Image 1 (tube, rainbow over the protein chains, first blue to last red):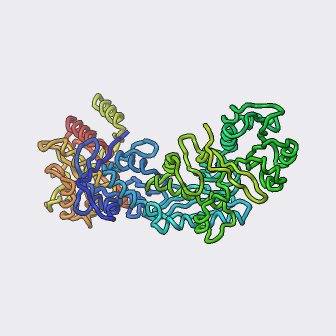
Image 2: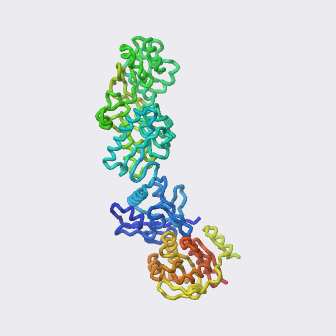
Image 3: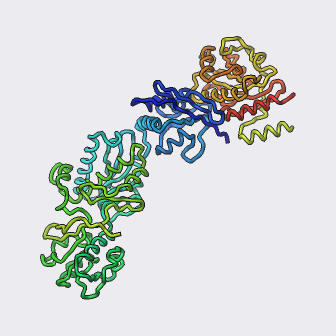
Amino acid sequence: MIRLSIIVVIVGIGFGADRGRDLFETGSTPGHDAIAILRGNETEVPARLMACANCHGIHAEGKTEAGVTAPPLTGDLSFDAFERIVRDGVGREGKPLHPAMPSYRFSREELTDLWEHLLQLNGRVLSHGVTSDEIRIGMATGPNAQASAAVQQVVRAAFEGINAEGGIFRRKLVLETRPRHAGLKGATFAVIASLGDDDWNAAAQPVIGPLSAAAAGPNVYTLLPSATEQWSALCGYLAKNTPHGVRIVPEDQQQFVAAAPACRVLRMKAGAAPTILFAGREADLERVILANPGRQVATLHVVAGRSAFRLPEEARGRLLIAYPAVPADQVDLAAVETAAAGRPEFPALQSMALGSARVLIEALKRAGRDLTQSRLEAALESLNGFETGLIPPVTFGSGKQSGVRGAYLVRASADRFIPLGSWITAEE
Amino acid sequence: MIRIVTSLLIASTLCLAVDWDTRPREIPDVAVVDQDGRPVKFYTDLVKGRTVAIQTIFTSCKTICPPLAATYHSVEKLLGPNSDVRLISVSIDPETDRPDQLKAFAEKFGAGPNWTLVTGERAEIEKLLVAFRAYTPDRTAHTAMVIIGNDASGYWTRSYGLAPAASIAKLLEQARSTQK
């Protein structure tokens, strides 16, 4: 194996907005010459004789000479991989590059400038959905056109807001919608606030704040608590605030409820328990609550659904519901109204979507200009108690992709849910 | 025989392409000019009785020629100023590459006294390329090989022109040590 490379050392530091282009096209910057060293023979050569554009072309289009092909500089590449190629002469698979390829020992800053210039060349895509001037974010719209339009409206407003400030590292956020997640694969960088199908993995990219059903998957960063986390918040509240003793109805749902640590420690009391944890079907809720006069019935919003509004007033007063998002009464209506350009049609949903957009924007800022999906995921996982002003504080972590763990506790009136207090974080 | 085995061993160790059948045909004694504009008889003045390395370049080539030239520079340094080994670069774009262009190219890559760059009439240059089996109709398809030989002993070999300079220098020293 012939191993030979040329090490280039830039002497001095150039400056100016076009430094990346200067380095690419001439191997040096104005007033600062560069040196190349052939590995294996320790000889310095001016880098201007080995400029990137000489071999790869002025537009990085690639070319072949003397049987040696300098490839076009395109493809999905992280900054780290780029650095290994340029400085160490090591390709993506860890193999040494062709000996005609110099190894440039630029400073980090110079490499960044060069990287920026490469991004600008031909609007080249370095990661799916990312170019030098835009980040394409996807959304699966689902069957409810009205709800989807409302959600899109607030997300677009959030994107327009950040774009008006110059974007994120000079890249504008662009929302792209498809009916299903599979349609977003390869087209967008990340997915936000989807109402579409539950095939999250089909998108093959980070999915942030999905709005439909309980979402889970290695690429899903949910901003709605899981059922277990809601049960945990509910049981934690019961342990401190109500007479002890609970009974799970129906009994065959014991395991489902007991998955929540806070519920496991509640004292189970057959028959005479003052509180019933109802984990059955929505259609059975009314029968259970009316068959147990004087007892409190606690359940999840996903179980009670809209049937809670149809209960007699006395029964509604005994019903305690864990609600996974900010109740309509507590939505920051001003923010949502601004985004929705008027009275929001779906305040809770739009509040969630706008909160998700703020989480995404924050993570994109933290991910830095050398944007890759793994950097976005690392940035998401660095969020700790992040306040959007719209949804409960968001905390992800390594292996913790449920960003909001807990619930609001609400009671149902004839037409809406009334919160009992502030957000309750689920006990671990 | 021992010499051949040793050479093959070195060649295989370095993964260099060595072709024992690529000994040049009779080297034509064509009239060329060097980077200083001096008329030179290619065989008589540059090759006869010497150990030489011969590569093809052209000064407007930006891809492969700079590293080829940089490698030559390193080889020249490794051999030292008192070496009698001669490094020769033959321009394959003789209409463009006049002595001034060759001189500038040589200076850019720090050519020393043992490195000669030559140009000349196209027909004469082509005779050389054919003799060295290095002729290509399209100059951008030119070879990146360096031909290494000892005219006195008749020992000829080849190396990839972008092999480490130390490897090429070693092959040159080896060629130099061969005897007829």
